[in-house]
Image: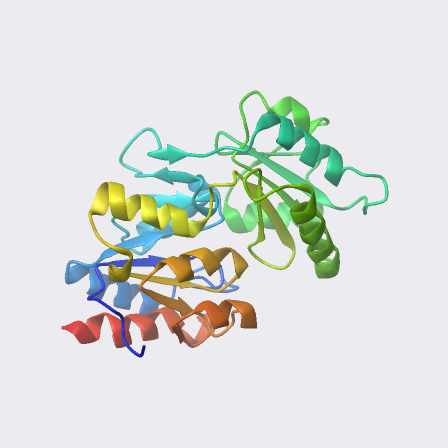
Length: 279
């Protein structure tokens, strides 16, 4: 298949590595392409592993007009409404087990554990990597000596972060053996972020929720664009899945088309070729 199976009615974009590069900004060319699609009645939305409050800036920056799909799709909310349409959380008992797992004494002392409850971030201490994370995400980290104290309600996500990509890959594989797919969803958004969420959570199920419940469109009418392993499900769901040129090989293999890299405005190239050409 060399063209989308149906006219595109919804474009869903990831943030980091897709519409935003190292400078944490959306380029004028990508903004212009998204605006051109919006002007033609195409819906535009963001699906990201970021917190809801961190995704807001990008939602407004690109003029998105469907609810934000944050936390890998666990939290779906229209900024104009006070409550999310959907909020899927990690079972509290599993969350406690995960915290204990990441605190194992044989693991590096500088492994950062992030616990997200009610769109707030809780950490044991604000380490250098957490500070860089909060600056890029424009969020505040709340220190807690015992992260279990944050679990007054079930968390939306628990993340482990370490610069050793091989360590993150080993932890990912180990957790996938410890928990069934109907207990916990485990993925990476970048090679140093290990993310755990409710088992029903991924960007594909989030788009499906929007398509069926709010937009009355089919998967064939969706173009999804992403760059990492946490984007695989939405690339598989969409009628037209686009991987960025900077994506890992396994992600590119899932896509219908591979766009130029983020620093080459790959999102704009995809929109020009497969959406604006409809007109």
